[in-house]
Image (cartoon, rainbow, N blue to C red; front, side, top):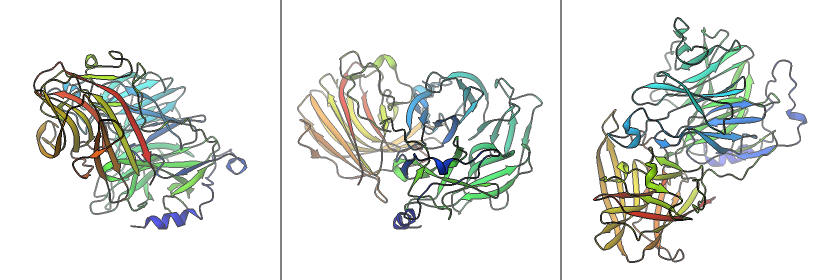
Length: 540
């Protein structure tokens, strides 16, 4: 792997973003544009995977994957490709089976998978296919992507698929090596329409082809996807053809690691109003998740080559677009003084809405127990936000005076491998402990088959108000979380030692989250009041 220092040196030579091949009949105006936006990779050091992007004029909209979290399918908006703000979710919940409610099982690592967003003739469309029963694809529509999305149809299941509208308005779905034509109203697959395998993998492609994204440029069709040959390196490949049904030819357009982390792959390309092109591709960064990287896209002999002139992901660069920074952050503090949760929050599975409130006690989030469960992975109404690199810290303030016997409340570094800093009410005593939980699932169903639990340290708490803190370090070869508690939010005591956070695609398949929870193990009726969540992103 190339060293981090190599990339710092590389940026000394990277003084402008890219002069892309202009569209026919257009002048590349980037050279005359005086305003620009600087960026440093990753543009979001947080779990924002499976990137799909569309543009209408100077407005860019991006969709990402959040699987079992609700609301789901986050839509982000930008005007400069660097500063992004979540403006909506495509759905509040999925209702096709009870597992989304943590009833009769779970949908950890399933739910809303790699999505496709497209702008077409005044409307925005989203296609995604939950990797879960009943194995359907969903198509949603909105005329304002910052507002409400309307379900158009459920159709057959397409894995990691890309929606595409051709010049004659015919809608298609690309999925791996397959092309399927839809009805014009997107209600279903078109009977008798195109439904063919458009190319066969060559001998070098011994692994999966995933993360399909499709564009049409200069009258050619371009299919971008990840290739991960068995025993080989993760890479971004492109297939192109003069006709939508082929024949297609292939080229590797990016094969590079970055900043000491693994090889980069899976994303999309997009143009601006001046004819310049850019790539957004994610990189696996272990416990924090999969982070988006911004880079030039250079049209070379009709191929969209990603990275700088040497095919490397740049550490930093400049976009020839006016900076548009709204001040929004991927993760944000919340004092719960509003009647609505900040858009940064997502629930673990579908929430039980009558068991949480922002109005029962003004300025607090009340989490009421509503179901007797055995562990955190089964517990409804766990509220989550992403963690961020290189380092971050989150503090939650809890009023625990109304907990009942058997209730457990606190904060977790939540993933398939979790560390849980929780208060357990046992009779008249409240005990704070740091425990680790490693969940296992039955293959396919995602029903919980077992949890390995280990208590690291505990201490009895006499106060009805407690402050809990998690510090996380996602620097290269770290992925360490440390835990603290306080009774006054000033004097902090460390508890339980260091915890090694992990990303495991066989379990939750996402980056580690802050998770605030309260659940019952004996009887329902207790509650905790969350005063605030205070977040800090640290840069060293």
